[in-house]
Structure formats: C-alpha cells, structure tokens
Length: 187
Image (tube, rainbow, N blue to C red; front, side, top):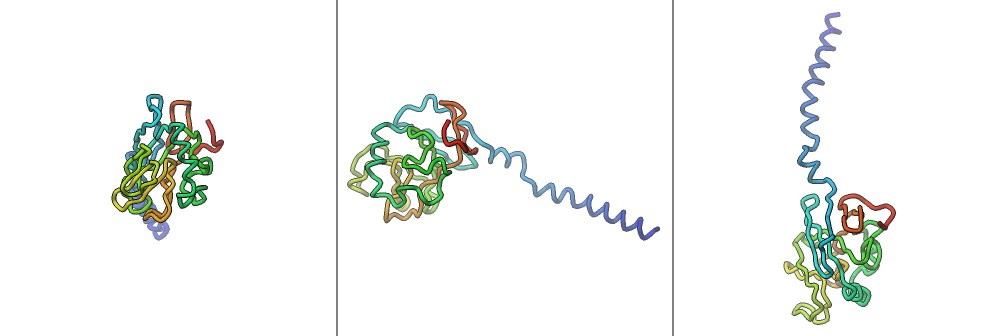
C-alpha cells in the first residue's frame, strides 16, 4: 500500500511540475494578437494610391488600381516569369491575371521574395534606368527585382517568385479582413 501511495504521489508531483512547463510553450496573448486577422478600411483609398497595414509583423499593401493600371497588367504578361500565377504565392481565389478578388484592389505582402527587402512603389508608367520599357509596379532596390502592378516578378530577375497575396476577404465594399480566407472568391 505504501508503494502504491508513493507511486500515485510521484505521478501527481510529475504532472504538477509539468503543467507550468507545457503552459510556457503555448503562445502568449501578444503572440496570438500578432497573428490575428486585421481589418483595413479602404473607403478613403483613392485610385492610384497604396496603403499599408501590419499583419503578422509584415507590411501588407493594399493598392487601389486605376483602369490604366489594369490595362498595363494585361499588356505585360509576356514580360513576367509566372503570368498565370501557377506557383502558389496566393490563395486560389487570387489565381487570376489581377491576382485579386476584386480587380481594382490588390492585396500583397510588401516583402521581396528574393532576400526579404521591401520593394518601393513605382506606379507611374515611365521609362526607368533599370528597364527602359517598364510600365510601373514595384521595384526592389536591394538587388533589382521588378514586379508588375499585380505583384508578378519579371523574367530574369533575382526574385524567384511573385509577391505573396495573403489570405483575405471583404467584410463589406470598404473593409477588407486580412488573415482569413474567402472561400467563395468574391464579396
């Protein structure tokens, strides 16, 4: 009886000592909040403008594209490495030419897929020193990667993949929830 009681007491002590250890491995409230979905109000985002929100410690860009920007995407497919977005850098509902749920709004993680630098926006359709026929998009000054206005990487550039489209959905015409998938593909 003494051996059984000692065994039970030892088992209880082991569990009691292990609970704080296991609990310390769970994510903190701060860590949970950092990975939580983020709402973005796009009601004041004018055509041709970009806004940035933070999700999971990364910059997420939302671009309100103009009709001219959308035309440039259509006409530049021959210059990009993955024009049909076959590599999985976006949810299924953004596997289209515009890489978006709604063509007018582009949602991208603003980190270059080459070495993690932050590309800069170059929305004006003009010749640049690094590509005379480039019509605008995103340029990574660290190593020269070019991305079009859909976040697709240009051929023969250091970045191996298109910019990432995070999971997102529309809660209304003016609010996007970044961090949750939209299984239906449209708002």
